[in-house]
View 1 (cartoon, helix red, strand yellow):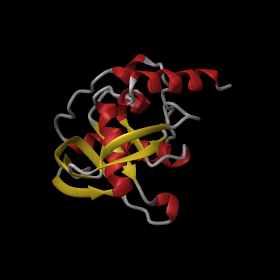
View 2 (view 1 turned 90 degrees about the vertical axis):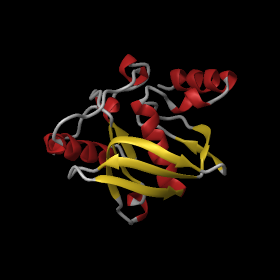
View 3 (view 1 turned 30 degrees about the vertical axis):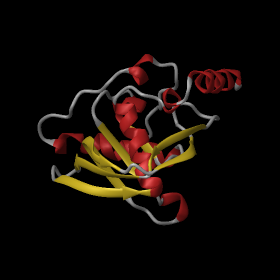
View 4 (view 1 turned 180 degrees about the vertical axis):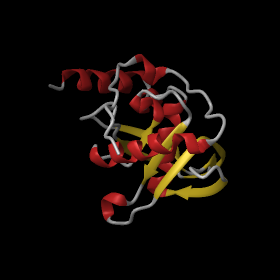
Length: 166
């Protein structure tokens, strides 16, 4: 396993939508291992393909590992099947924008469809941190950063704070 370099904003690849993963997903096994190694080393709870320069619709998450409850999940070609009307605002960090957080409002619960690392179609209901992390990573696959979810003044303030960091 290799720890991959994580792209940082304003790398233009972070603002580009990704292509679907096609063919046998087994061909992504090494990338998936490397993405988990990178995410844990960062340390983060999610990592999307474009954050490591891979412009494919693929992300890895592990919402519970920092609290001792490892729940690794590989999501290939993910999509939200449904989302709750109930929303939750929470500060989010991003490995590609280190040192700042953004208060983002998202659906509290989602049903996520995806293909797992074995090529099996999955449909899972996610709540809490796992729902938030999955939505954050899915945004990356569409070229959307967490600060893009803020109103213009909040976005500008967050980017100014980020640019002022050493």
